[in-house]
Length: 207
Image (cartoon, rainbow, N blue to C red; front, top):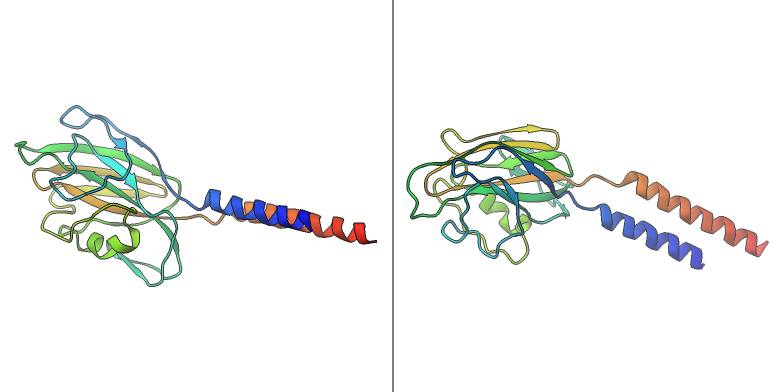
């Protein structure tokens, strides 16, 4: 019986270890202020005046959410029942700074396929999903004008890579990126194999 318990625990821990789709890396040239993109921890407050930067930054939000209903993203929806992870990318200069802050062609790599982005100009998609997808302990604002992308801002999706261009005055740009959480099928099979081995040895011990 011990072997079955060990196999089950191994399977459980393997699922837990693989149930995430975090930001892996960010690469690009520098922003117009001379700074590079950065992966950060989720801040405690993401209102427009609270968190500022000089180059695009990104942080992970909720990492394993099973959607109880379809989730609206730019141009469509992600189907109910999909397991997803959430991430936020932003460029937001200080209110006191004049001019345009730009960071062009920044490449963000994720540990999971990108399923959709929330970037509408008023931030309504982001606001509607904060309770479900926002980082634990982080306070988010409601929707307001120009929170998302507008004008010459843009992004392109290529599998697990998101290329983002942001040009901001005030307020800055905040977008939410939704990725899948790949089923660790090979890990599950490995765990089942261990369980099978436990059954086999238990039968031999009773023979």
